[in-house]
Length: 190
Image (cartoon, rainbow, N blue to C red):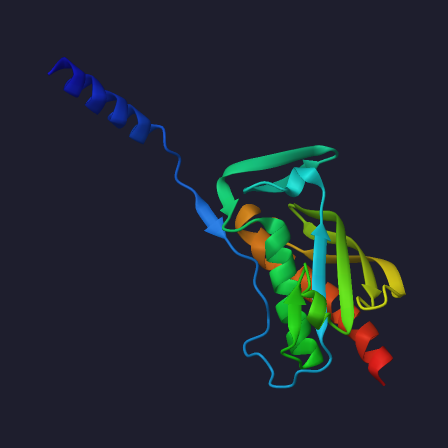
């Protein structure tokens, strides 16, 4: 009987310490996947700073101080989410359904590959910033076509909570980056 009471007490104590949390996904503007299969595109690998490779949302508090929010979390690993969203964005922008994520299938290498190195993906009360180095290349030959360091910014509502604004802000920043890369690819197709 004592063991049963002790077991129930431990379970109740554990339940009391559970912190509720919200889970977020990055989103894309693409509603439908196009029918065309050209050009073929591969996205990845996606690299990012170690402090962003966590389940919790991370944002700036000013200077070099960051907040790691224990109740606001990503529903999927951020690196994978970035690859997924950029892939879908690019499919819509380039009107192709032939999009792969890294690693690419050796017998079906895409026409263009995009490597992403996220240098900064940050939000603070007044805005969000993305700085990304990206490389456009031909996977079959390894030829580098262009390498760029891009920066995109958008404002946030400073009177509202920051964490719930982050997923939409990051999604918008990734859309802007996708547009920039798609423009480069389209210029090479003409």
